[in-house]
Image (cartoon, rainbow, N blue to C red; front, side, top):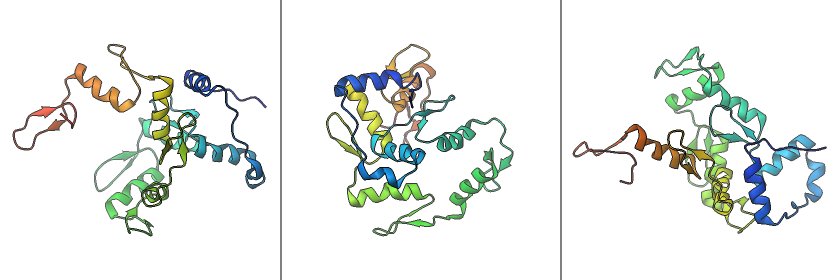
Length: 207
């Protein structure tokens, strides 16, 4: 069976493969019998950091079709479910229920080490790496480890030189979407960070 990367992923994949010298992927060994083929592919992405499912509306990408589908709802123009506490609208009743946990302080996922509480299980899992020091997402070029896959993806651009986030106004490209957001304020004049003492506004918090 052949697998094809989406067009947006091909430049990064080619650059990374070139830098790696086409190193063969590690063998999964006895892992094969523990997962169905679809689950095995998703499991491998925990180690590789690959996010092949891309949102057509923004620059975010995801490991599974389900994650993409759930994210895509955030772009829906029709949001009939309104939060009674803050007035925020949501596309589905499930999305509203998840949001309402923030208001009722429903955080059922508790860290066994420090007691910090989280709304979502995956947030707790990421937090626990602060205590364990676990960095499961490893750069295949330099061996540096990261706690989250998106941090690995950003780091890999140091090696590949890829700059996928492009300013629509002037064409300048950036390695991270956050850098692009800050840059675009040079065109829009937006200064969202204000000094509490004098009211002077800035484009970024470090100014």
